[in-house]
Length: 338
Image 1 (cartoon, rainbow, N blue to C red):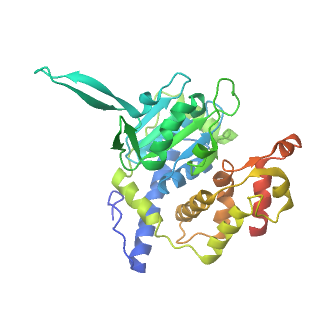
Image 2 (cartoon, rainbow, N blue to C red):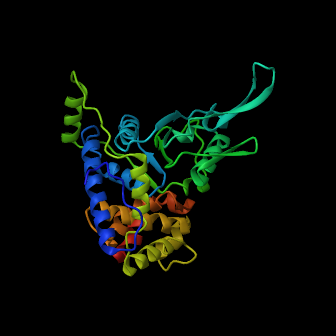
Image 3 (spheres, rainbow, N blue to C red):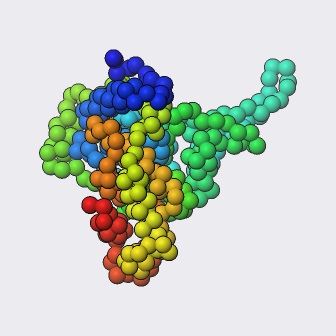
């Protein structure tokens, strides 16, 4: 079976399901290998981004400039066979610059009519670069696209291509002139992926590879249709009752009004909602797939708790003043499941 062969249609046959999962796992391994030829020393970032795309969600990549976030999105678009576009968010960016607008045109016969000109959001992977630099009005225009997979212009709805994923970036150190994303929009991101500096060996390989006469170029492994099939297959991967209970326990214990953990009660202003449970449920399935397993484990829940919860929780003022961190709180939530 070639890697370009589409994933089979849904079936209740366990043997067929196992065969489809193993085939997809083989394809994803090749995807990771191709990405690794271009992106150096960011294996966990690549894994979490792939998890987001295979789960059909959106990701917020947080890191200082120069860590190959833009390069990663371009490489993913190429390797997965997707139409990718990039928008640099600035304070003067208007909603129409993203979703498109209607223009009045006059035909040869003198008849006038409005024609919709699609914006860059009409793609399969949209990179929203430094998303927090745009005004709240522009951010909210992207919100409908992320949640409903369509945009509305002049009362007319325009469906977006399928699949549609937003990979937004945010600089954590330069906050002047920025507009923090509201909680409602943050919750639309399946994961917040923290991008750190590469280690010494990875940076050495990157240095030698990117400053020579020739650079390795990414090549296609999958197609948009295969990615859609993979997203459907992910939802068919079975999840054990113990994993479901771990997800529910972890998410609900992060809510100060319903938790039994004293640190959460005293430190957390608000906790994760039900969308966090949904995101974690999808993400653990994909992580098991990346590791070549047929079903997720509680270890997957613990491993993905940080990226799934860190943007869906907030500390109160007293906790921040005392130096409490969200990472520490999430580690505390994970302790009963380790």
